[in-house]
Length: 357
Figure: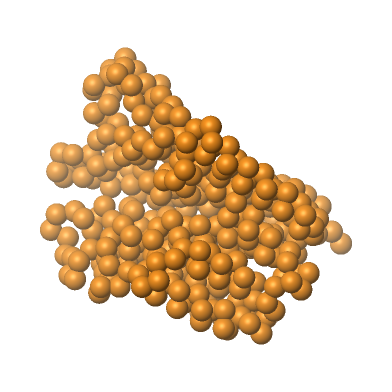
């Protein structure tokens, strides 16, 4: 499963950087929402098969997921701040910090908006809501009513971190949804998620774009699909392990062939049907696991390295994508061995300490 997650992250990188030797993979929304499906399956599996045996299952699950996501996010934020300060010293323009400096100069008596954005950057809180805010004439943040607005986006140190905020929103509901191996609970939640989408459609005319794509209650649908696939698999209603290899080949063909078929639901359907079978087929592949572990550092760091690659005089042979992918992969390997593996041991030790004997 790691190879598919790797390609989903690579798809997002290529959306931002352009094609790699003429190769494009999935559109950003297809890659992100496919990853949500995989995440939903994986969270249902680990909670049912690992955390349920803990004496503090909810606490252990939420803390361990926080330790999985937040430290690396904070590292990228600090790297972005350091790079912005270096750019200010070197070139006189302070990168991402320049937006804060310009806003403070234009509205010297109004710091509340900057404080809110700063706290959001440091904590991940409300990252998925920033798209729905803009500045009024006094420099105050105002809610745009779930309409797409990009004026606040430059104030985010990690612009794609809104997906992590959506993911963490989902984690809050996993213990309740995964506590009992009951697909009807997940189906009920799916119906509610669809009802939210229908309500937004009818009352607020929210039909596409970021108003759906970056709004956690509507994106909840994809995580629930992943959880449903886990339960249906274990009720023997989905393809079993022997279909793992055909399913893997099918999804790879759909990813690399997307420019020709251009059908998001083919990708979503294949991921929904075959995720479990592929997982059990590839569980023992060490190289596949390594690719999967590199996925999050690749995804969360690539916008920072994009800033570096786009800096003047940085060598960009064959376009922007090649140096960006190479640098991001190198960083992800360093992070895996220097941060992820030690953090994984910490998370495992916490779980062992609370396991029922």
